[in-house]
Length: 192
Image 1: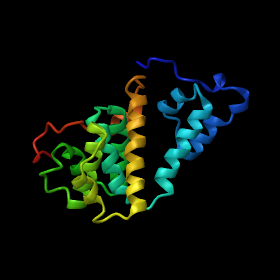
Image 2: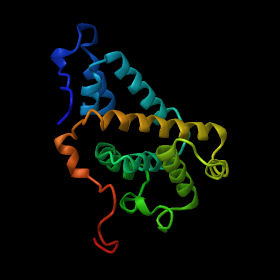
Image 3: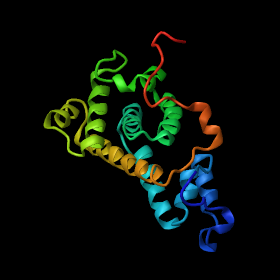
Image 4: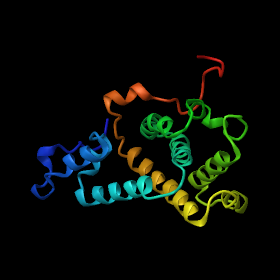
């Protein structure tokens, strides 16, 4: 159960009365993270603006972005992040097998070298903040400098997001469970 109550439409300040309508128009729904961050409407708008920029104003391949975000979610054991991005990622080119076997990214043949390089970067930045020269330099083999900045900002942003979701214990929406992926695979790879 969330550590703070979710904001309702009636609780929004009069000057922000359209905020939830704007979020629903942009995202198609009003997720609990938005209802929680609505305790501070200005900062919620800043978070949404950054999120929108990272998703719609960048050249980084969406599949690579989602693999990085899923890596952050898996390593921080953030179910909310894994469920939401586990549902989004297949629509952007991530194969369901890649989500299921993300914990084995270093050896599983589901991942190519570019995907491994992005996951390695996301893993090191999430676990240690600092990344090795080898990990960073591997990105330059297939990403230009602008795309590297886009990846760095995505990993940093979603590390911030999970550090909001987890401490505040933001609940998954009831219908989000339909798209749940395990944080670690515990099923036989040959299972249907």
